Figure (spheres, helix red, strand yellow):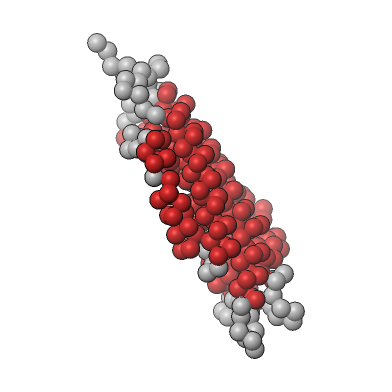
Length: 253
């Protein structure tokens, strides 16, 4: 009896050298794409950083500004952000190259199910970063500046600010991957939608704990992360029913 998975992968087996050459080609394309975006945005580096800093600057007391405590910071920090932004904007292309490298080794049913998860992961990461910028930052910076002790002039260093917001962007982007993680766990057979529903109360508590760890120390910011994570978990549970592994799953040729 033939193995139903035998004809799944495309292109058959490739020698190691062919894999390495293919990987080199994909990496070069990624580097070129990021480089082109970086060079194109370089003339606007200061404007892009000003846009990034807008949620903070717009809420600082009148007469105060952000500061640079290092000699080269006014020049290097905007370019550092521009490079990160280039990678951020190129992420769909980067993942497309990764997918084209990996997909030939997957079976057709695996490709059919994995591709939507990959696309959803990118969209959710962007969604998490945009949520942090447009929703969390205005409320969080407003709170943090309001509770500053009297007589303390708030003048944030531009390098420290960049590190802070990039950390928050990454944290929210990862936190918004809850549906994808939920679906993958069910697809791998580690858990089931029914078991996830039974553990909902623990997930809710965990969402608020993550919100407490990843956001500034105020209830509003914590709730703004915890509630979307909970909602995304519920979405993941519903969609994971489509990925329940069957006892005998026939692979399409």
